[in-house]
Image (cartoon, rainbow, N blue to C red):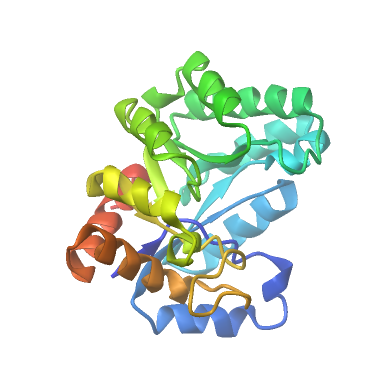
Length: 255
């Protein structure tokens, strides 16, 4: 039993064969999937998929790339969606200083607004952080976000930063790059973080793990992330699968 804690099944990259992709998930070891929104439209699509399939849950929110599209009216619509039973988090939200598709001050403003929405609704958050480590950490602290739950999605920071997040009560989600040959930093993270603070994800259709790197990612490939964590920690695949499932169900308040 595996929980893919982050998969964009609503992505246009699945438009041609989404039903077949979902059928493969249902026939695999993957029991649960969390589908986060990245903008208003994808948040709607994530909720619709969660309504259609028992094993899919949703998060709603606006990614930093699309922060420039947000306004108070759209935030109100996201708030309404977030009240639905199968919406389990606000996300994915955060800061991205690699591409800067939205101005940084705009990213930070709407990051804070969505964090405040999560606290109001008593929902945890799914955080995107790319080359914005200090600002993300500072804002999460200033907004007291660790009280309601912080998940660092597709964690790519240092082991030292990981330990800081763990001390604050956050969870880290590990994705396909941990399987890459040059993944020394991520291996150190997995070594240093206790299993009860880890989740696994694909971020599909992106970040496909070895041995399928370069091809479209799917939730069924989350098993390769699970295998690699088990190898790094010197424990069984079954133990990693079970504990990451427990962690994700607890975090997202899934019975």
